[in-house]
Structures are given as structure tokens and as C-alpha cells.
Image (cartoon, rainbow, N blue to C red; front, side, top):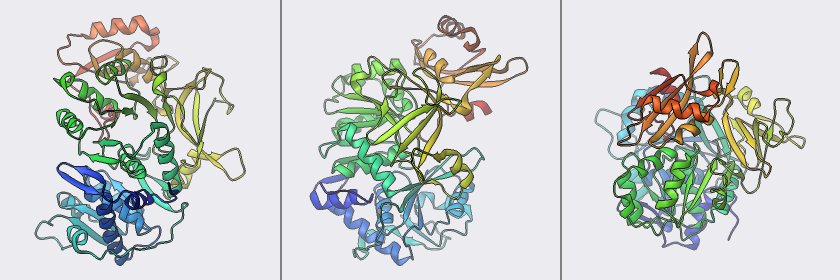
Length: 512
């Protein structure tokens, strides 16, 4: 196999090797590698005609779609860096991202065009829209026309692997998003390491219902194209029956998920009667899967390997737990992935001993370039490493490591609750709560308290038909937790609020 040095090589090389193979499926639409490559050539040529050059930032503001996938590869072919903006983004945040990045071009769709207009942003210089623009607005360039009839001339921006490939905006402590800068080398390295341990091949059919603006969803497309597999593109996991229908119809072999998605699937009636024999693996990240969910998933998909993983946008992926270790270490997120070194530093800045809690540090080619035009925040996260000039990533996450090098997440540094003078990890309490039959979702947070500093509150959603009461939950906590860790408040909700990527939104719970 030819060596990938740039991210768009994933599509180009697979199109050369497997031109007639179906690369992307969306509903009843199917696109071959050669067809997708030709579409990206047309759009890349149009972008160069708009003045896009090496390193220019191009925003994609659209739902999961074939057009969004074509756009991100075309941007890189033109030498630019793509930015996938969550489709639910409001005008004020969209304006900040476009201004902050000084985006040269925005690619969007008709259903998002009103938001673009409402953003009232001096950037970008040009707008390209898929679909029909509502009346009364200036006519932008038509993506549909470009993809159908645009010249297919190839362009050569002469990029190298150190050039910027993408900026992914994540929530920041200042209230404004931070732009994580990723080079081609960062992204190629991360993708190669992940397909290595997942043993992904051209025979795989990967379903992603996660947003492409979430790096976990984005990388399913990148990794699928890297090996010449088929990517089945969905738009949401809000309707689990549709996800299961797609898995059966397309004979999906790989299902990436988050705990929320798996919780919804496990609640779906009739799941036991479906045919998922093609499924080869499931992956989980964003939060640790409750042990009860792991047990149920293994019962439903006995032939499929289940990978528990941990990562963050600043380096994409950090670790994975080999499926054969899942029985012995169900709460572990594994060890560092291939071509990467991870270690834990205690409060004294020394390598932590087994069992000692400290901050996780990541060293590897997958570590970001830094935050876009935020030198102080970059310096906090990227610090001197082993060799002169090297920088390693301080994750801001607290972990412990066992004698064999397996990692266990404790808490975000800024999530630790100080109660009665003791440091309390929300994750430790959540693990106990998930051990109660009938608990579907759990989130633990600290609330202000004059005596304790912070009091512990547990917000819980129950499985359908569960008769658990607050008293039942407190009794279980008192049995398995130290006294200072037992929640003072228990709130039972119909469901817990989620972010666009399926994580439980503790910020929203706090504001309620």
C-alpha cells in the first residue's frame, strides 16, 4: 500500500486502487471511490478559482451528508484547512468562528443559510450553498452546479504533512470556542494508529451516526477511506430503530458509539430478534461505558469485539482496551495506542507510581499543533518534552495506572468536587450508580454549600418500567461509597440533557 502523507490521499489512493467500489452510502444514495474523487476534483478547482490557497481556512456548515464529505476532501485538495461546524450552531457562535478563523469560504446547505445570514459576518469572502437559496438573499455559488458541471481539472497545492489540515473548534473555559489546529501529519498518524488496533480493512462497512463536526464521527470517514472500506452515513442517533434498521440492511461490520447511543439501542424493543451477524466490532469513547451496558452489549453481539477507548480533540485518540481484557478490567480505558507514549505525572511533576493519581500526558505525532491564535492556552497544554524543542500534551485529565500499565480515568481536573475537605471524583460515584439495576444514565456534580463547600448531587434517568426510588439509590450508595461521597441530593429525570455529540451536559444540569 502506498504511504499516505496527506489526509486527502486516503480518498485519492483508494480511488486509484478500488475505483468502482462503493465508498459512501447515505440512505438510498451510493457513491463509488472514483465518483467521489471526481466530485472533489470539481469542487477543489472551484475553490482555487475563489482564491483559496495553501493554509486558507474553509468552513463547512452542514448536516452529515455526501456533500459535507466531498467538501472536506476538496478543501484539502485545494490546499486549504477544513473546519466542520456543528449544524445546530447559533448565529452568534457561527460569527465568532468565522471571524476568529478568518474563513475564506463557507460551504453550507439551504437549511442552514438563514443562520449564515443572521450571523452578519464580514467573513467569509465567498459562500457556496447546496440546494436552493431562499428568496430575497444574494445568490451565492451553487454547490450542486459545481459538482455536476464544474471542470474536473486537478490542482496541486504542494502541501507537506506539516501543513494545517483542519481546525476543530471545541468549548473553551473563556466562554468562546478554542480552535484545535491539526496538521496532515497529526491526522494521518492518528488514523493509522486506530486502524491498526481495530484491524480495519476494505471489507469493513462502518456506520457513523455521529456528527462529522465531532472528531469521533469525522474519523470514521477518514479511516474507512484510508483502507478502502465502505462508510454508511447517518444523521442522528435520536431514532435508535432507524440505526438498527440501517445496521441490518447494510450489513454493518463496525459501529462507533458513545454511552448515550448504546443506552438508547439497549432500550429498543425487539433488538434481540434482529440479525447482526455481520457486526465485527463496536467502539466506545467520550465517556466510560457502565459495566451493566458492557454486559448487555456482549450478550446481544457475542461475535463482535467491544473496544473501550479514551481520547480528546487535542490528539484525537489516546488509548484503547484490547477486547480480551474487558472482562478483567471493565472500567479501564486501556493503554496507549500504537506509535504513542502516555504517562502520568503526580502533583510534584514526577512519574506517578502504580495506583497514584495524576495528570495524563501524551507524547506522539498525533498531538495537535496548538490552539488557533491562543498562545497562552497553547503553552498551558503543550509543554517541553523529553527532547529539546519537543512539546507534549498535558491533557487536564486525572488518571491512575495499574501495575500492568492500564489506565483508569478519575476526573477532569476542573470537575473534582471538594466536599468536607475531601477531593471527590464524580466518575467514581457514577460508576457505583450505574451498578444499580434500573439506572440508565447518571451524572454527578457539585452544588454550592455553606458548610461543605460543595454538596454532591446525583442526577439520574431510569430504565423504562423501573420502580427505583431516591431512598433505594441512597441505600446502595451508602453501601458502596465512603460517607463523604454519598450524594446529599438525588434527582430523578425522565432523561438527562445531551450535547450534540451525545455526552451528558452537566452544564445544563447545573443551570436548571
